[in-house]
Amino acid sequence: MYDVAVVGAGPAGSAAAEACARAGLSTLCIEEHAAPGLPVQCAGLLSTNAFLECRVSERSVLNRVRGARVISASGAELSFDAGTTKGYVVDRAALDAEMVRAAAAAGAEFWMKTAVIGIEGGRLITRGVNGRQEVAARLVIAADGPRSGVARMLGIARAPVYLSGIQAEVPLERESHLVEIHPNAAPQFFAWVIPAGEGRARVGMCGTANVHEDFCRFVKPYLSSVTHLVTGTIPLGMMPQTYGRRTLFVGDAAGMAKPTSGGGVYTGVRAARHAAAVAVSCCESDDFSDNALADYERRWKEDFGRELAQGMRFFRFRQEIAPAQVDRLIAVMADPEITDLIVRYGDMDRPDALIRRLLTKKKILMSFGIMAAPAVRAFLKEVLM
Image (cartoon, rainbow, N blue to C red):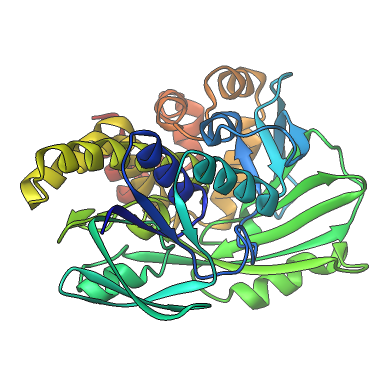
């Protein structure tokens, strides 16, 4: 019997496995794919904090970015450059593989090309390269992605919102230090052009409806050839309870992607380390009751729970903003006073502080037609309370 079985070897799963193994717990990590990070289902843009949380070398880094250009459908543009690295464009397969090696070096055992197909009597039923096997573990950490099979098998409610994403890597020359954001290209979320170094860029978008059609229109001007095409799913909105039945849910399996950007590495890895700390405590006390597991949810909520909650409010508010309002907002935010706030307080992982400051600016409020927009007033009341 293992102390901990981690399901999924993405960044969150590998971080959990490494932390558990370093603490002396017998740890097994089960991954359905043959190699970590493949197939790639990520834009591959990590904030500096997210990259540092992964505790890896820079071997996976393809490019560094310092700021962004936000471009509306009408041509209004907001551009800012922090003058220092704010994000890393990475090869996710290389980054994931390095995290797996670190966890294995710490003592975690890995079963690759193995899927969890059932949970019976506290035992995981797996099928993979070694056939059908049963695994006993005192605690399970589910890091098995947005469609978490573990949650489904246990009958635990999952995230309420799912975004579909498509991204193509294409030959394209762009300013290497700026990411492009196109909010009107994907009305429910946004589209992007991420410079990936050496005359290449990643062109993609996320949304809740008509994503394939919108993507085909958006990518057409950039499409001379495609070197890589990926699709993926991003869960938004936390599952109602991230623990239960001797299981802790982390990362995308718990719906921890940031609703403002869709990124999930930072929150997933931090949650994984909180989960590992609780796993150690539970194993030491031999207490795996829901009351003991609840400490995990308390920990991650104290860490970044407010950011996720405010992010969901902003996401719902985003659905109410018409393209014309987006155009006006971008034009207003191009004001040097506003761009200075963005550079000073902008944080891809914790945007709440910046949003609160921006919403104190009358010119931004007026760009929404604040006096005639009950939805805007409701959003402001929630965010600024």
